[in-house]
Length: 124
Image (tube, rainbow, N blue to C red; front, side, top):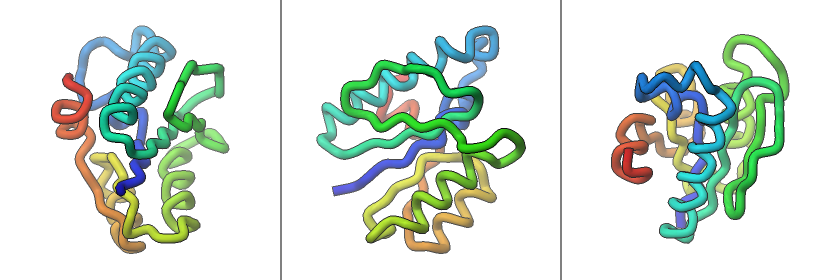
């Protein structure tokens, strides 16, 4: 079984569909799509988002917001989640950020590109 850790803003930003006009709406849509993915796959999913935390309805997905503001804030939190996991070999991180990908691969986690994941797993 794979545990998925999703770089939320990286997935949202993988498609230039005007998401920046409604960041909160884009986050809600992503969490809903990830909930559907988690239900279909039966695998645990955690998404880490940037920005000020707010309530996002999620049935199956663990939703987190970066613990601080600034560059690489969510990336640092994702890297820490991977580093502190009991078995990072069971983790797949969804990101297209080369720096984050290198950091988590160094601990044994797999990496899947954000755009490919969005197309193949979330249907868009």
